[in-house]
Image (cartoon, rainbow, N blue to C red; front, top):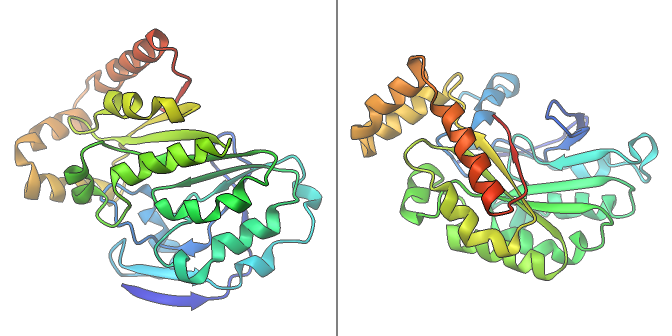
Length: 265
């Protein structure tokens, strides 16, 4: 892992995500090393040649870049984080995310924090002070052996479910991002069943195979689940209704079980 401390010119960026005005990314890169990560496209903007998951730039001056008051940001929606995890292992030492949150406490904003790490429990004392804040945990599977294959350095499945429970006990709004759904592997119904008592709503998203992602996923399949390679090639290289049918299945399941959801595909 190549780790650098850098100084950033800005920390608040306009968002291209639907329903979000601004994003904050305290780090460049991500140590979770997820095989499916869409954010690997960031390499071409950051002058990194290393494999995704093998570098982290720490925006060491991030807290200083947060204004004293919300100003033009009043009433806007913020997301932490769009191309990194705000609670990487290094956050335990550097506390960049924590310092940013301390600067944002009195801002009149709608804040969403999404992570795969149980480290977020450290900051419950700050998060519960926000008037409008929701915390999301990404879950791609309930099988921790599979999690180790596709998200090798993220927190375990059980620890993430425990985070949801603890966050909910502190009266903070919670959600689960079920994504990306890995065809034949992501047991999304099981995720909902095991977390529903602690979750206000769910996002569902499909596996995006743009750019380097396809090669990363194919490599994983060849090494671990070669029997599914033909299925993936069929889903992504032929005309079929796989995602249309899955969307209908999710909609029906959620309607029958009174599940609040947003489907992103």
